[in-house]
Length: 356
Image 1 (cartoon, one colour):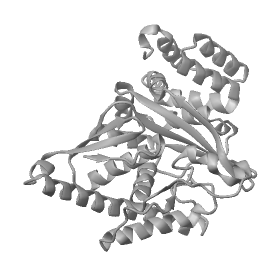
Image 2 (cartoon, one colour):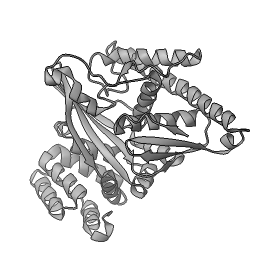
Image 3 (cartoon, one colour):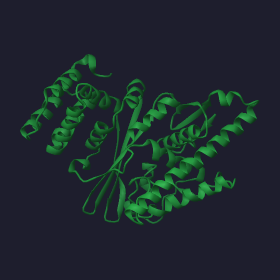
Image 4 (cartoon, one colour):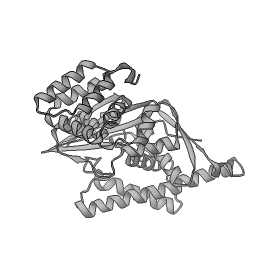
């Protein structure tokens, strides 16, 4: 049995997903992630674990599985980082553009490379809390940013290197986000999927389908909104595997936005959403025609931001009038709305189709 450190719901979530990823890579056949308030318990299972002769052997086997899995995950992440540097130059952002603080460009991969090297050489990486948790991994830490409040001192929230590395693994492989940049303004919309009930291994792995495999850089003005960025992202990434998990299990979506204007970085936005409703709505549209569903979302968002916001709010808050408003605005903006899309919206508006 494993537990995350219990520091913060979002940071602990990333640690839990990181442990899950390492268990899979280390050969653990099955496990369960159990929410415990702001922390999570991970319970390894499977034939490999049951074949161990005693509790001590079993614990050692799990410890080695996590160690080997973490080495493997970090190697893949660092290889990706090096590929970005070769393609984009020395200031390539680590983890596909999630960080917007210049200090993180090389500092994070350097630390993770050291963690990997220590693991390979069987050196201790637990114990001392000497790594500052960046707001990318823990938005609540933003309240301590000196530039935001114009006070002296730095972020005092620190963690040991093992949990620091596990959190980055969980973020890197399981957390969807999109980056928007215009002139000297940069926004990164991050969507942390927090389970409210236990998840088995296959359900956790299905969530990886929501993470785009390529860098997320966009310049469309609607990406300025976290709500619209989420709708766009889901329209382009939603898969059957993720849908099965997100519509059958209870999740809370913690959406937050990192903002940088000039040299000033802060958390601009933090919200909680029901991602299952958006997934269900998009599935009803895609079931009729994936092409027309995705084209409708794209055209709507690019034509009028107000129409997009009305549509998202209608889905999230079950506001029927919001659908009519979104379609009226879209038509005035010249958006062609296919009949099959209208039929999908009508089906969703039927109370029997709305997920309670």
